[in-house]
Image: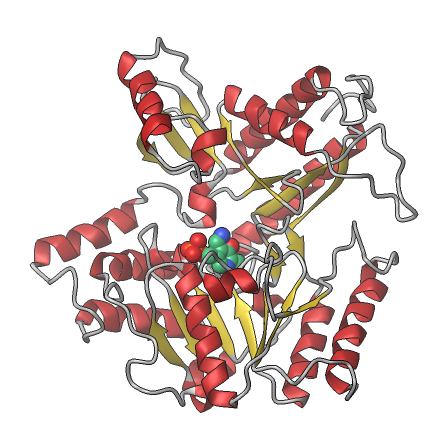
Length: 464
Ligand code: PMP
């Protein structure tokens, strides 16, 4: 399959029919299907082929799940081996050789101190269930109730995970400012902005009249993904670790999206060297099949048998696919590769930003990259930031799809174009992704008036 080629073909009626029936029969709450009206029928690596015969470069990767891309041979082989062995596919939380091998492989990758004494809880198969488990664990262990979480966070859609996310409406979770350089709430940005965020956290915890009782735990993402691809500075993560450790507050790090090499280290916490008390894992650890776990310090293991149960905690195919993925990333140094390639892609995005005044910011870590689109006609604030332009972002996403590129939108106002390609992409594929994105941005700028009715043509120069 030629990976970067787009093959326009006459859409067979099946394609239209499937999309029509989907819109008639599926819930109003459906998401990606609205902005990406495609019908995938085959996929390999970075490429998805639609029922209409078109090929797309998939930078959504199952919302960051597909570390090795679609249908990687080692993943398929691991799944086939289990199928051919006659092993049971579903075993609740019973011990099996497949599970044993997965746990051994996972533990081999954990940050030093945690690896020595870690406990693992297999959860229901989604990231959100593992987040719930983490909260239950730290509440039981500390006897405390409250939680601290960050503005812009995303931890899932079940009750407590949602309450800890930035979109929460009714919540008793204490919200702290995440260091967001481009829209720094303290209007300083950089290390100073991050330090002020840390000090605010510290003062809430130490001021006896802050109105914030000592919480059961603090949860954070080392790079906010859905929040708009915002990497936390390593120094800030170390400060959060010191602040929580000094006050016996368990630190829960949500690596659901950042884990398994995505950010240029095996776990995103490895960049800063911090060791969390609890790590929440899902997405890539299942090698494209559903799997979620929490891994935590044994001292926290004070909950009762059955405290966090669930039927689907023993998916053998996911464990086999996950173990194969973890081993492949580790033995092939794909984390380092993601770091190097990500830096080069970010350089090119920075050049793209210099050419387009509708790009307010580009940022990311490893192969988790974001391009924040802004209203090019609006005034910039004191920090140089302009209001987000979700309409333009949607136009860019659409123009990308027309050019055979699948991208996701994220960020506070859905104005950040997100790139989450597989860690296995070649240099050539990375270039193809950026070529199509650059072309799509130029096209969207030509056709989309700014939210304040600005002229639709304000390019700074030639796009790279
Ligand atoms: N945490 C993070 C950081 C995530 O990005 C997500 C999903 N995007 C979740 C938790 C929730 O995972 P799931 O959708 O599998 O419940």
